[in-house]
Length: 441
Image (cartoon, rainbow, N blue to C red; front, side, top):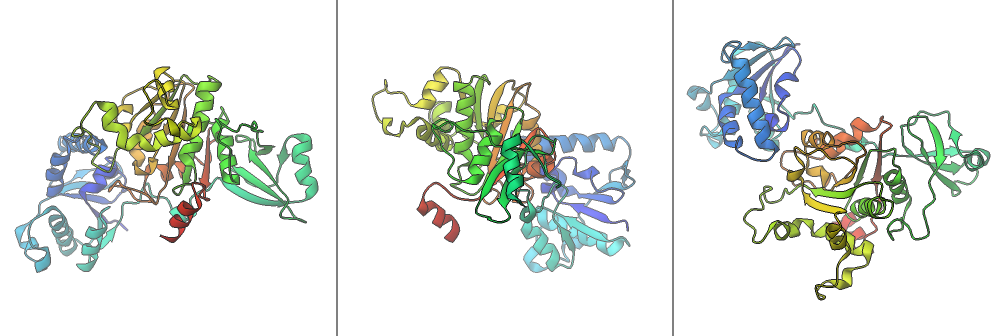
């Protein structure tokens, strides 16, 4: 049955193509949205870009007819810009008096419900607005076009019970074919049916469906980092396989996501010289992505956000004790920067670039929208490997949540691709205190 969808501004800021994603249903934009887009359009972040894109799209559609009367969309529905009438606003409860944005959107949804025979649905990514809509008897939904079920998120791992003979075949022949549907580059733990404690680790080679043993690591580990659990060992396999261009690592604090990615990057760039540079970027979210008010040059401005990365480099190079020493004592990451092998910068400066033959780590990727992640991935030039790390439970960006952020979106969309691999890290290895805190607090 055809419906009328009344959109909130945050839906368009999250997905500037949202207008065209409601099939043959009618889409209504309250006039207050245009005002809010105008306030966002000067933003230099993706919200600003999306606001400008939506404004240009509406201007192009305006040439085809009247936005108030309705402009036909290709899918069969109509797009309308609706005015908020004062008499409808006055019908709102006293607690919602005033013509501020949210209340004006609610008023438009109520007016359409009273005057149209079609079901009316308010679509917003604002939890509080959906609650207020429900209190007024309106049907309200989140924008879920790019949502994934976080409880069923692909983990990248699988345990399979096999016979001891089958397990031995993996190592004697160097490969194994299971009569089972598996994802490309999936990490497999083979368990002996007669003795489940007897296990073997393997992964699916590309999209061939064949299992192969994990590559042996040197006694020194990867850049002096030794995997401490099974998932970390699987993660290193994906990070060190040159045929895998995209790796996603998801896990709670202390599971080693960033450390493993940096350790693999140092080995591939500094030791094996397979990539021209290790490029690490982080989204600057907590303070609105604005670092201009901080004193000092760009490096000094970025220090508060990049310090977690420096901590990982100190652990890899064993240079924690060099802090505060004279200038001629160089920390590991400083040496790499001086040699042109390492670049650390905010994600803002990645936009518009072409990045060939680089080992690119995007840390805290859970704070990115699907559109932002798409922008990053399309920057990859020939020979570039991209690693996205993050924890969907630690999101600072108000425009995404655990189910709609760019990291989990990529995990689900790429799980069937031979050039991608994913591992969910579950065991904290930072310290016993950190692990217990993550579980108890």
